[in-house]
Amino acid sequence: MANEGTIRHFCEICRDVTDFEGEVGFLYCLQCGSQTQDIIATDVVADDMFAEEGGGLYSQTLHRRAPPKQEPEEILDIDGEEKPRVFGSVPLPDIETVAGAIRARYVEGLQLMLRRQCEVLVETFNVSPLICGMAPSIWLRHVSTTGAFKEGWVALVIANCKDRQAKRVKEIKKKRGQRKATITFILRTLRKTIPIYLTLAISFLSCHLAREPVLPTDIIDWALEAKLPYLSFFHDMDKYIGTAPVACPLKNRTMFRPTLLLGSCQLEVVVGKIAEKIALNLPPVNFYAVARRWLEELTLPMKILPHACRVYEWLLPAELWISGNDFFGFPTRVVVMSVLIITLRILYNINGYGTWEESLSNVTDKQGPTEDVTMESNMSSVFDARELLRVLSAVHEDIEVKHDYSKDLNSYLKYCKDVISVEMTPDSNLRVNRTIDKCWNIYNKSEDNDSGIEADNLNFEQKDIGTMRYGDDATNSTSFDSCANLNPSDYDKKSSSHKCVVDSSFREERELDKMRFEMEQNWFIYLAPVTKRKSKGYISYRRVNVDKILIYAVHADYYILLRTLAKVVRVDMRLLHASTLELERKLAWIEEKIRTSLNVPKGRSEGGPVEHQEFELD
Image (cartoon, rainbow, N blue to C red; front, top):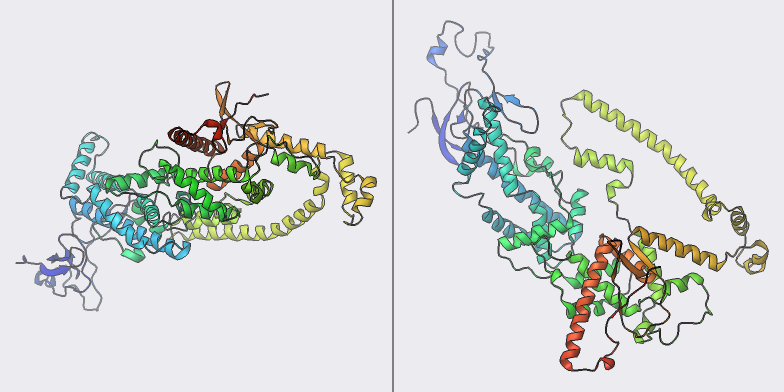
């Protein structure tokens, strides 16, 4: 039965029939402090009606009497200043109620963020709709393992907070400061138990289970470029789950703004740990889909793919299974690319025969290598190594690792305004907003003026590029400018007089110097092409220890292949090279075991064993 001065009514926040009490016509729930929207108290107290100081609530002039002033209660904004809000005489909810409301809204907001990420993956990036059904079930199973919704979780967190406050009695003197510290500790515990980046990890795990060729680098890039709802999704949170209840005094920016963006390797580790916690058996990476995607990006023929799948089935590297161990092998995408490197080397016969050096001379009638050096086969006639190196060199120049927002200054400023600094500028401060608008207008006008100047400079550079190509040599620049106006039909007749043909030996030496310098910058050493070799086997390179530093000695053909594929995978070339060496050792071990078990003589094995070649450094 309700007490005197209270009424029983259904509370939409508590989802139960509770007691309501209030003044000045408004009623508030005694449990959560929320205000009713459908009931207004209209009675008048008799003592107030006949009081000496002013009579009833309404005067004879039909003007409402101002209620007595009340001291405002502080509702905390942890990431900003404390903003007082008047709630009448209704007391603030207790800390247990606040902790429960914060926990419920935090988990509900992260679940909404995960759902929106899956929807964007399906709608924008053409991922299978199966992930929209997988992600919620994985999320619920993982949240249940964290223990955040156990019966005594709130009491345990508050007890831990009181223990911390007992050690800091001198710092926390006021009751208001203790309440703020407790709410801050509750939020930090929640964000540590259920981090915000778990939404990205579960989205990637759902794509992995759906056998989609989505890589961890894709998830991180899309989140960083705001194509996936992650960095600035807290700004739109109220549109989906409504405003926060009175018992939850925290802003959406404080609760849902990410402070950490994982790397691609860390994302795979988090996915592995989630699978271990919920006892989920993960399949290996979809090698066929990922390899097909990369062959399309590299514009290489699809006839390579069946051979790569055979090498993969022969090896079945354990690194293709996602693991929760921080120190377990190489990343999955690096292993997939290592298999492709081995396949390309076998098919195109990239074993240090100087294919790149021959392409520099442009001499067609040059005598080819001797019979001992070549390994002519049906595959080498179909797969042209010179064409492969040309395609890889062109792709290496076209690949851009930069993000969309870093293309120019205007894109970067817009990205910072819409994603990074969203909700940081107070809307009520008109002076600040006007200043920002003036700065944007000034920048836009200056950018329009500079565009014409940049176009003129570009035309000027295109005209004078011939004089700068060969350095400061006046003779070279003069000869090049004289050849600019020659027709193709008159080129052969006037080449001797105008000296348009640069000495092939000089050009070849210059390209070799550039290649050596580039390899040295990346901790590689250039090896000259091999002219004589005892066997016709597959070359497996070794690391060389020079002054206690591991340096990689490779041929130019292999370096061009490694350089382009490492840029596609977005890893260091040394890491990709080390992964390739590891797989080559496994292949050599498998072949040796098979040869031993079949009792085949060593000289009759087709192709010979893997040759580990020792090189002397100059």
